[in-house]
Image (cartoon, rainbow, N blue to C red):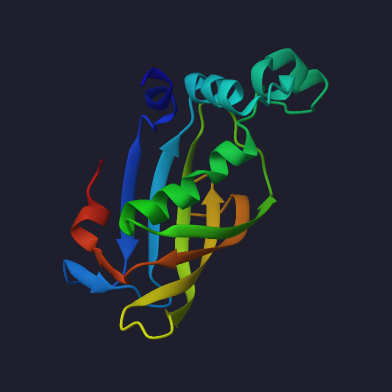
Length: 177
């Protein structure tokens, strides 16, 4: 599908901070980081799919003169935030994204690369009546930074996801994809 390819990242790198074994159980404090570069094609594809054709995303002059964005066009905030459920689903197939809060702290410009960090901050076991299997409600801190040192915050928030398991492969998480 041509459109799906247009919105996939050109550069996608993940790293984790957790136990040193190749497979681990997610614990409070564990984090996954992913780098994502946003291109003109990403923004155009998102505008087409979402219907959000605000000229601050599509026209440099409007972004500068009307929007006040000195560097020109900005990436849709929701497109940048889409990295968070992507990271969670990549490490926990079958995860159900239940909620997300977002605070947009700074613009991300077309051509920028960001570092998204998803960190477990609370884990609760959920059992269903009569079932021996468990699912897990996990609250994640979700942050997106404009630099590798995580000093320039672009997005801050929290997400809640229901995970089928807390097991994840750190080998897969740390590979460049």
